[in-house]
Amino acid sequence: MSETIVTSSNRFAGLLTYDDIRQEAVNLREAVDYSLMGLGDLVNFACPVRTAGRPKKGGFKITVSQLAKDIGEDRATLSDAAGNAQFWPEEVREELPKQAGFKMLSRARKSTGWKGSVPYAPEVLEQLRKAAFEFLVAFVEGPVKREPLTVGQMLNRVVDTIEKVLEKKDPELEPFREELKSIGFRVNVIVSALPWEEDEDDA
Image (cartoon, rainbow, N blue to C red; front, side, top):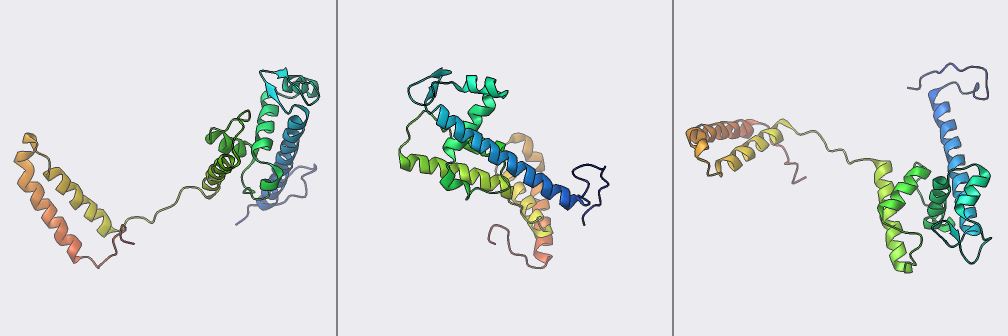
C-alpha cells in the first residue's frame, strides 16, 4: 500500500504518494543517465584517441582534463561517461535494463576487464558485452530466492551430517560413536514417519 507523503509548496508539491515520488525519481535518474551518456558520446567525439591526458591526432586537439576543467566537471566523471558511451553504443542501449543506472552500467563494464584503448575483435567485444549484460540482469533480478527447507529436509541434513562425522577416524570421537549412530537412527525413524516430501535436490 502506498504511503501518503506531505510535501512543501515547491516543484514537487503535486507528488502526493510514494509511488508518485518514486516515479519522478526514476524520471530524473533516467534524465541524468541520458545526459551522462550524451556527455560520453561528446567526449569520444572531441577526444577520439587519448592517453595520459595528452591530445593525439584527430579530434579537436584537446584533452579530457582540459574539457573537464572548462565545464567545471570532475575528469573521472567525464572519463567514466566516455567509457560507458564507448562500451554501450547507441544500437545496444535500448536493450539495457531500465532499472540499471549509469553507475551500474559502469560497474558492469568494469567487471569484464574491458579497456577502451584495446582494439578488440568484434566477436570478443560481443562476448564482453554479453558478460556485462548478464551482470546487469543479475543485479536487477537479485539473488535467486530458494524455498525454505521443510522439516523433513532439515532432519535429512542432520542425518547426512552425522553420517559424515562417523566416517571420520578420530580417536576423540570413539566414546561417542555408538551414541551418534543411535541419534542418526532415531532421526531417520522420525523422518520416515513424516508425510512424504519431494527432496529439494530432486525437485
